[in-house]
Amino acid sequence: MPHLANDRKLHGVLPGTFSFWRNLVVHFCAFSVIGHWMEIAYCSFMNLFGIVDADSLVWDDPFYPFLVYGVGVAVCVLLLEPLKQRLVARRRTLFGAGAQFYLITIAVCLVMELGMGLMLNQPGPDGAYPLWDNSQLPLNVLGQAWLVNDMALGAVAMLYTWCVYPLCEKALAKVPPRAMNALAASVVVCFAALCAVKFAAA
Image (cartoon, rainbow, N blue to C red; front, side, top):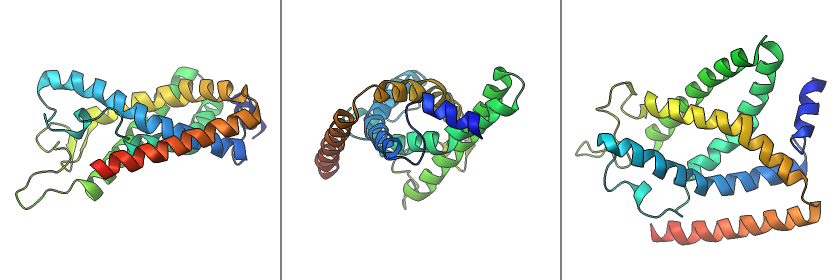
């Protein structure tokens, strides 16, 4: 669809090009850390209701990478961004496209949270969950996902897909290619070093 390609050009690069994948790697690295900061703010608010464990990993080290948010931005770029374009093209109003997009995004976040929980957050012999415990909360899904979280994550994913990602791509497109390649390489090296240090200390 030509109008989708033109819209992507406005964001800086086209899917499948080296620049596209280079920028996506930069987003993955950056938002793996930024996502942790976002979760600190979210958990600080939710802690007003006493539902965040005091020993949660979220409080330990603000520079500990939460790779799930890097995966999240990759899902936004590779799956939700094309979906947004199709909905905007098909729906009569931008509000209708946005509302449908948000509902789909909540479902995607729920599936991701549930999948990660079933893989990494199985209760031990004592019945305690190692990472988080949503089993006592209303609107939980199999004790792992929590619809309230997924609604918040859906809003963040929508903000990223509709606003943050396009603005970042337009800004990165203004950087000369050689300088951008050097910047991306520096980000990857620094992120790899950060992961090596933080994961080894965990």
